[in-house]
Length: 308
Image 1 (cartoon, one colour):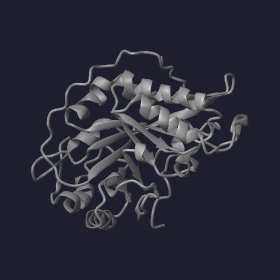
Image 2 (spheres, one colour):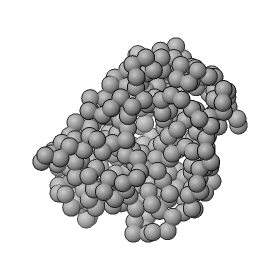
Image 3 (cartoon, one colour):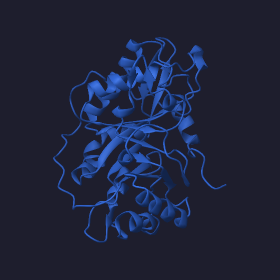
Image 4 (cartoon, one colour):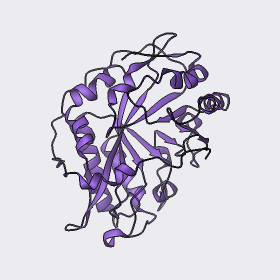
């Protein structure tokens, strides 16, 4: 098959089987102060994004790659994959949930997140459906959407994160008596989240019912997003939303999974067509400098180096 449809993320379906890690959403204490990032060497070219499956891999891998020419970070944004949106059948509310691996990354922010931020790499938390009927597109009211937005922004504050990434997959709308997607839900959610964290990243993995419901009641939240990207690895697909090219990644690759020739072709096209983001998925702990260099040569005119 030419590309990997969505992601091999079956293991995320099992997240609900892990012990629920409670989070005090009202907390104002940040786990480890966010140190001012050291100025990274200047890098000209698109923003590179790395999703990391933290069930299997360390976030620190993102910081191990630099450009041979100039020493700048290869990756600009690291995405913790993934927290979940769960459904509490007792209270009939959506709840932000962390499996034990995500919780460990957050609790160990001083050693798992701050080192990246100190290099100038932004760290964003991805949130994904969990087969329980709760999703970004079926909040029954503005109040319900705002309540979940507060859980998200409180998490960003508590753990010193740089933003939230929305991935509307695996919600299985309708489970547990939940509603089907509606037009107002995601607009209310994104509006509230942006109001709560005006200086932070909000990104969209461009898939699912939420991704096509960005306007309601005269409010269009498209411009609220800092980034949006193609969700199909090994392919080129421009996200169908009215953001400037500088915020879009039509290219999406799986590191070690997408052929290096395709990785290079998609990077070359990113530059030639003037897009500002290049999305990668599944950075693991191996030395992937050859795979990474396949796109850095096209994006930045430099090979990538790996430092264990």
